[in-house]
Image 1 (tube, rainbow, N blue to C red):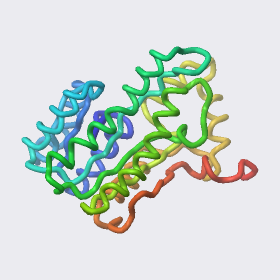
Image 2: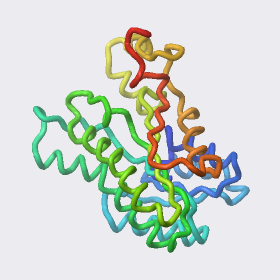
Image 3: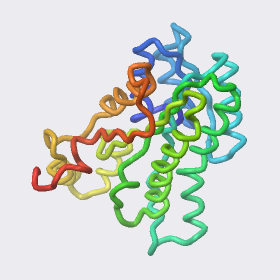
Image 4: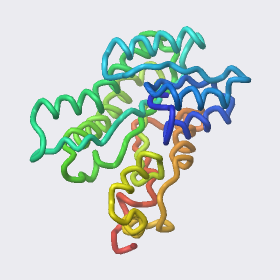
Amino acid sequence: MTDGAKGIGAAIVRACAAESAKVVIVDRDAEHGEKLQAEFSSGGNCSLVLADLGAEESCSQAVEQAVGNFGKLDALVNNVGVNDKVGLEHGNPNDYLGSLQRNLVHYYSMAHLCPAAFEGLKRVDCKYRFEDGVTGQGGTSGYASSKGAIMALTREWAVELLPYGIRVNPVVPAEVTTPLYKQWLNTFPDPDEKLRTITSKIPLEKRMTTAEEVAATTVFLISSRSSHTTGQQLFVDGGYVHLDRGST
């Protein structure tokens, strides 16, 4: 579970642990990672790997440590990403490449390393990302193109990994209540008004998606209950992306 120390990642970790899964948190945030790990330390079912996945060697070390802790992996949830505002007008090619490194390259690295390391033992490969790769946002060229690439890669990998029985599916949330999202809201003069403007455009129940709702879908995908689901994009967004705006 990459970027699993807080926010949606932490919710996925807790949801997996609730199903008695053994979870490996891969994150560079030691404080939040250790705090989350402590919730499950009594059962020994949660391991923390401190790593910045921007470097390929860090990805390799994370996989090796995860294998050393539990012997094998059954699922990979790629979750790292940051909307770094590298746009077309306010940015340059070097900034853009840096954004791809932060938001895309490690997805490939982790997905490449896991099957090779476990000789086909890994059964499920689940991706997680945001809706910008589908809708566009403006001012986020690096982030949006990374997420669009991740959507394409998951279907490419779903085909490539068919012979090994490995399933690949992206979970696509939109507006989700997380600590980082709250920080962004607080940059506005009236955060509550900004939040009301956003939720008014979410068709189902006019509210934000919770991290726990994203986690529930992710757990479904990495479980045997989705045993014949691969190459599918599951949107957990209250209809934000696909329903007619007239519904709001």
